[in-house]
Image 1 (cartoon, rainbow, N blue to C red):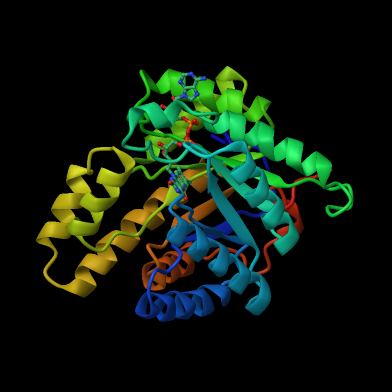
Image 2 (cartoon, rainbow, N blue to C red):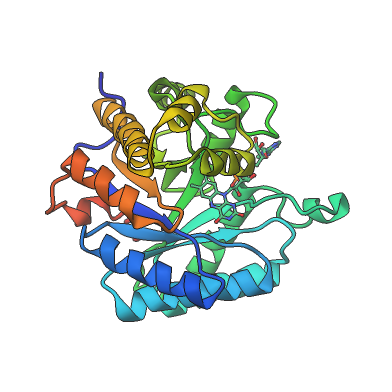
Length: 308
Ligand code: FAD
C-alpha cells in the first residue's frame, strides 16, 4: 500500500534543542558536525517563548546559517505572544536567511487568562506568517516560506478526539501549511491511520513521521510527559530489561528503524529524527535505513523553501 504523496527520494531531517549553557553548547556543536556528515535536507531548531530560550534558538539558527551547510527550520510558537512580537520574529527569521518555519501553538501558559490571547491556535500563526511573507516578497525574491505544522498520530492531549485532530490539520493546510511533521508515536499503524484518515478528510500535504531512538526508560517517560501521551509498555519493558547501555541503545535504534521502515512502506515522504541533542542514536538509525546519500534535495524543498 502506498499512502504518501510524493515519489521523490525520502527527506531526512533532525530536531535540535538550543543549548542553554556552555557544556550543552559544546555538545550540540559536536552533534551538528556529526549530523552534517549525513547531508540532511534541514535541521529543525525548537523554540520556547522565555527570553533566554528564545535567544538560544536564534543563536543556534545563526550558527547553522553562518558556520554550516545545514538549512535551519525555525520552530515558532504563538500562544501568549503578541502580534508585534511574532511579526518581529518572523521578519528577523527572514532577514537571517531562514526559509522554513514550523508554526506551532506551543504549550499552554500556566495562567489560563493569558493563553487565549491573540493567537490561541497554530492556524492563526500560519496566517500571520503568510501576511508577513507577503510584505517581504522582495527579500524572498517573490518566493515563499515553507511552513510546516504539527500532526498527531496519537490524539493531542487537549483534543476531544483523533478525528478532531485531523480536522485541525486540514484547517492548518487551508491556512497555508505546506507539510506536517508528526508528534512521536510508537506503533507503525498509528502513522498509517493518521495518513489514511487525513487523506480521507481532504488533507493533501506531506505528513512526515517524527521518530526518536530512545535509549532509556527515563528519557521515554520524560518525552511522553512532555507530549502528553502514555509511554509504550513494550518499548519500556525492552529498555528496562536490556542488560547494558549498548543493549538499550540497540533497542531504541531498532524500534526507530522499524517505525521509519514501516512508514516508508506506507509511502512516507521522509523521516524526521528527534535527536534530544544526542547524535549517536540518530546516526545509527540513518545508517540502518540506508537512505540514498544523494537525495534529490530540490524535490524536498517544501520543507525549507516552498514553491512559489
Ligand atoms: P494547534 O494545532 O493549535 O492545536 C492545539 C490544540 O487545540 C489541539 O488540541 C487542537 O485539537 C485544538 N484546536 C486547534 N484549533 C482549534 C479550533 N479552531 N477549535 C477548537 N480546538 C482547536 N512546542 C514548543 O513549545 N516548542 C517547540 O519547538 C515545539 N516543537 C514541536 C515540533 C513538533 C514536530 C511537534 C509535533 C510538536 C512540537 N511542540 C513544540 C509541541 C506543540 O507546541 C504542542 O503539541 C502544542 O500543545 C500544540 O501545538 P499545535 O501547533 O499542534 O497546536
